[in-house]
Amino acid sequence: MNMSLFLHYARLRMKERMEYRAAFILGVFAQIVGYGATYFVLWLTLQKFETIGGWNWPEIALLYSLNVLTYAIGAAYTYTPMTELEQLVQKGTFDPVLIRPNNPFMTLTAQMFNVGYLAHILLSGGILVWSLSRLDADWTFGKAAFLMISVLSGACMHAALLTLIGSASLVIVRAEVLFRFNYSLQEFISYPVSIFGPAIQILLTTIVPLAFINFLPLALILNKDTGIIPREIAWLTPIVGPVLMWLAYRTFQVCTNRYQGAGG
Amino acid sequence: MTAYITYFRKSFKKNSAYRTTVWLQIVASLIQVGIQVAVWTALIGIGSVDGIDLDQMITYVILNAAMYAFILTSLYKDVDERLRSGDIAIDILRPARYPLLIMADSLGRAAYRMLFMVVPIVTVSSFLFGFSVPASFSAGTGFVIAIVLSILISYSIGYLIALLSFWFLTTFHFSWAIGALTTLFSGSFLPLWFFPEPWATVAKMLPFQFLGFVPAAAWMGQLTGSELAMTFVVGVLWSAVLLMSTQVLWNRATRQLVVQGG
Image (cartoon, rainbow over all chains, first blue to last red; front, side, top):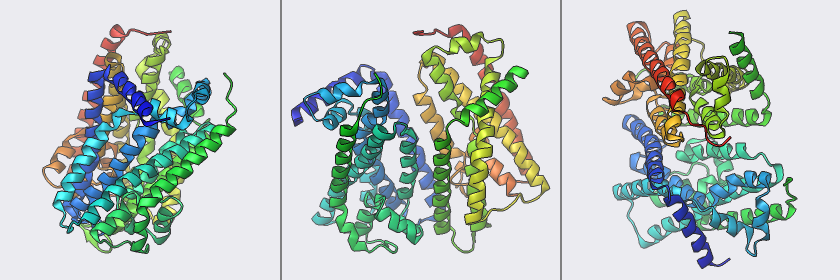
């Protein structure tokens, strides 16, 4: 599948959503209010306590925004196809995707590209820019470039996690709970990872490498304490995302090849 | 009455069908408790802030995890689904009051969650992090009253969202809006006693404080005497207003209902 076909699919999808313009705009608004509330609680907390694990309000806002922003970018491509996959399999509508002369993963992500994540991107992007303006990290070209690459890599990590769970639904069918479980895990990186016990810190940099999404790249840029994790490991951020995405993609392919259909 | 009791029992049974979900929910809740304990350890550490120490905050966190069973707000999802599928027509035809059927159904789920989720969550977390029993007999009584108010308020909020979908045919926006208000004003993450003014005053006038803060604060003996009495007055007033609104909307909704598909 080439880029122009992908864009064509995405454009069709956008048109489809814009048929219900009022509902779309209300949806964007509702999501901004929803995430806004979480930001507000964090702000209230830091009004009272000033820092969490040595991170002040603009820094926590940056930490949280980087997670929401990367999630939104990754999820725009993968969330809808991966959560719907279970339904597609049960209804037998996954089969037409497989017989198209295109890569099934690309077809799904293009067909189900979700414009609705605009709300997340507007809010978290806005707060991210605001918090950057409030920080006095002496910015160099290198740091700025590193942050931008971290955004892309983080988006890959989120997409990879969703793809892995989606692939699981091809094998074990009822995977809905796994998506909810993923949300619980996200909670870990709403705060600086250094506040957790050593075992959790290691877990979040190895088996479930969520720390690479926001905590480690920011700890490197802002020169923060990284707990028992060596700070240098943060330099791996640009490759962790793409490697995970590749692994998830391969897993998806293996699971697709094993797919037998679930009745018709 | 027997119809409602049967509904309650059926709901309890229906919920026990999803074993894996229960296990994962327990693990997810324990993770949640663990994360919040770590956050409060970082925030308070040794010593205390405004007379609240870490052990008290841990009890607060565990109590708020336990509230999972008593907050019935999510009942709008069931109604929404039955509205979409058209099954709502059958529900209304039944020789029983639909609002009470939903209540029975939600309570059945609450009872199930209480026994098979809350009990293990509280047991494991108190073993891991420590947990205090009610501050006194009257604190325990206050907790029970607060829980009754939590059930009434969360039920009517959930039911109001469901009723609005009779007109708007979607619950998405309302559920996000209510979710936002709950996140902010329930105090389930940041207790109201740490709220700066004027937010503390605002939160103490809203019904959302019953979805987290009030039961826990009553249990811990942090809300007592006339302050507790005033809070209960606020809660009773809100329950009355919300329940009456559901009644008014319900009467109109049944006349408004158009069942699509079939």
